Image: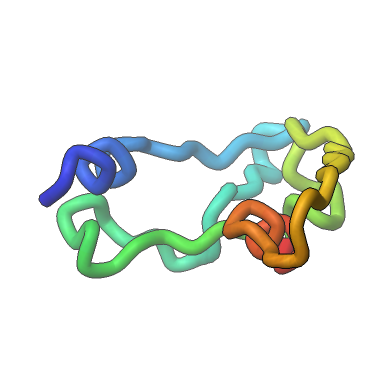
Length: 81
């Protein structure tokens, strides 16, 4: 396993919320146990981030100056979000 995978597989994300009985996970349910990583990984709970229901989100604006016509990996990632 590469060092990058080891780090990603050891991160423990926690559900948080504004009320103790309304916790929102940053990942899609059901949670994939860390023991199954990197074969299976938890997926980002995009709906919670986009809707603002995940409580620690802020809008992020990124301006990218395009120097050449080829798109970078970063641009593709940002455009998919």
